Image (cartoon, rainbow, N blue to C red; front, side, top):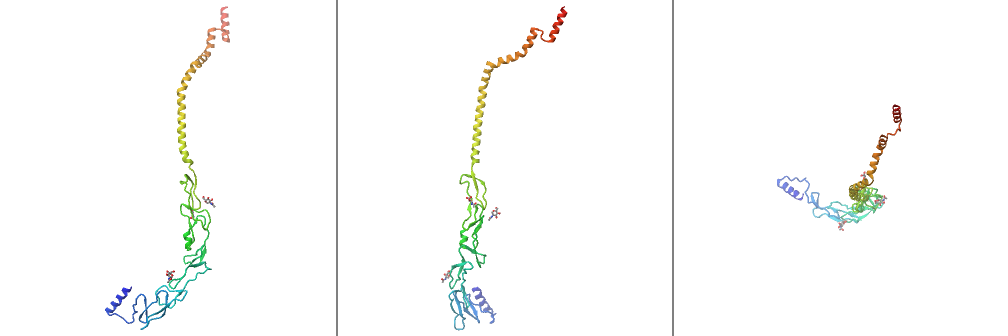
Length: 274
Ligand SMILES: *[C@@H]1O[C@H](CO)[C@@H](O)[C@H](O)[C@H]1NC(C)=O
Ligand SMILES: *[C@@H]1O[C@H](CO)[C@@H](O)[C@H](O)[C@H]1NC(C)=O
Ligand SMILES: *[C@@H]1O[C@H](CO)[C@@H](O)[C@H](O)[C@H]1NC(C)=O
């Protein structure tokens, strides 16, 4: 700007296009007054009188409780902000001649909106929301934030942050119920894992026992059976086999007339004989 202004001035003068009615081009920390460039007042000061042909601009310090932040031609400094207790504000930094007073919400309160015209009291952080210390210190917005994935809050509190879910793995347990933003993970003992080891072992042991059992049966019972059959089984079989035959054979062999047919035959034979 400064360079452009100078070059513009030079250029205009060289080209002969200078018109007396045009605004005077002044430096940044100057302002134009009645065709002259007067100095502006520095931060913390205000203008008392403009410069003229002989005198520079006259400036004076801002009165107490007022400030002026930039280079100015204003005749008034701005009053410091007042931190209204009624609106929930307290002083954050005291103003001086160059800076305004800065207010902030009282402890336990935060700005009602981005313009921060008033403060409102912090509410307890609801289930699923946690207290964030840094936001409470800033006092610009509610200190409550939704619990991020992996954390939860199951209480309504003005101080409790979101807590991380319990790590079942660290405890040597397994997840039974997944966590939410309002509830912790529920772990259970790793029974399944111990069972998954025990069951195959038991299966192997049982299979071995059964195998041994079968081996023993196969190798010992035939001898016992043969011995038993030799000792007692065979004679019984012979007797049983002979018994049904023996009566028939006996009758056939004996030829005794027990049945009616036998009797008739015998009578017939007797009659024939007579
Ligand atoms: C005025 O206050 C501002 C901010 O609080 C600070 O940076 C500055 O140094 C102070 N100026 C004087 C002269 O104390
Ligand atoms: C908590 O999680 C539920 C379901 O995932 C979701 O609907 C709800 O908005 C969450 N609440 C907060 C405070 O993030
Ligand atoms: C909140 O969760 C913790 C951890 O799971 C539990 O010990 C506590 O009893 C819960 N509190 C309420 C109010 O549900």
